[in-house]
Length: 423
Image (cartoon, rainbow, N blue to C red; front, side, top):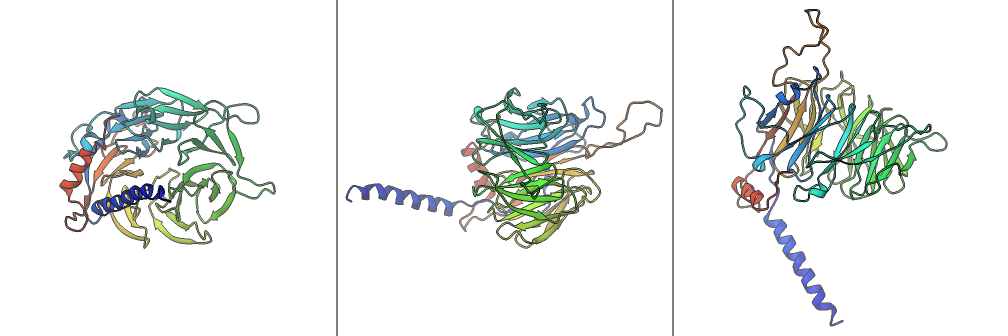
């Protein structure tokens, strides 16, 4: 008994010091009542594509916040680093792009989905990878530093032909890749590339379950072992990650599901669909009825419009066809604020993982008939505020005498901890 006491004392001290450090520092509360300013803007890089009607299809921050990844209709993925911890830059709408992409990866076909490795860190080149799935191709794992293809994960159908995944996601542990297919989810071991995988049917033996193409995947951030899937059959479902046991099926979306995301505490699930103007909120502890609906202008498009929840978990941001970004309070389900992000469909919105910033992507497919009889399509009238990507900086509350940090303290602490490093 006497030997155990010295071992317990350091643990108590560590717990007390950890609790004290948590009280001394709090995340900055973003002020959504003040419109954000555009810090960086990118447009020209997407117009130089050989495809005349190129447009962005989504945007996602890396887990460490050092860069963000864009997908565009020219079958290209681009990595943009965030310079100097997101220092302010007065962008002029008449100037060129803020800076060039650090990395350009070209896929062979249209990109269905992409995602970052959950433990990606710019200080560890081995972890700097992201996965993508494209039409008629296997899942690719790309090196975000060099642009080289690390490995592929191949799924085959009944006639031994490669079948492409529609959605892809890493599990929270970062050890497996889950991919959505037609009425099936295939699971790949990240350390065993090739054609080894486990296949789980979303239909039970009595033909009950989730039908259609599994178009969206999301894991609970609280490591509860729950996986949410969305299907083009207008249903969402919640499974156990370890054995894909079906727990719930959620009905209520008016269109095919294009995005699912858990709340930060893992108690709620948010789902959005194509040609459906509402994001639905479900309580996964009950999963019997819709908690509330969040409106966005998306009732006339088949585009996948990605939304996101801020790091504090209090607000959700989503774009729409009207070019606006709407911010909702998730505790009440009420509209908080909004701002115009583009003169086009805002199809992607992603909060920075720790800075009061966000990134948006805009654009949609246009079908223009040339007046001069030339068979080549012309993108006349496309401005820099369309088919573009932008980085936004929000104002945030400065709490100096109540356990919080001021703006200068927060910036200096970010620089001191070297939170940003170029990939």
